[in-house]
Length: 138
Image (cartoon, rainbow, N blue to C red):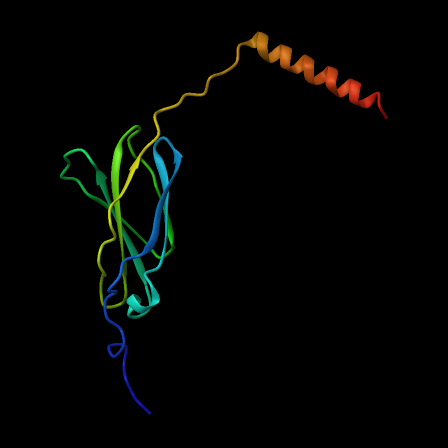
């Protein structure tokens, strides 16, 4: 029987997370999701994911967020702005390589356009007429 501690089979990941995608949720937030690195490149249990992002325009500011999930919501982004996102996985020993950059442009700011009062009244009248005519078929 081989007696060994955590150090025997655990090293840093040698591959980055796969299927890294971004989904726009609003003009200032996105959902990032991914799959773990391929099993042969995990080199132990994945205990953490680190996401790094910055605006594409010349910027010296990088933001990071960590999670144990296979997704993260990134909020507080600027509207109509190009960003680059990268991710890497960690074992207990440390981080693996960064993924390729994932570019994403946030949506433009969109204000809710309210209908004029006249249109709202007409829609309500149509709904009432339809409801009455449907009830007469019973």
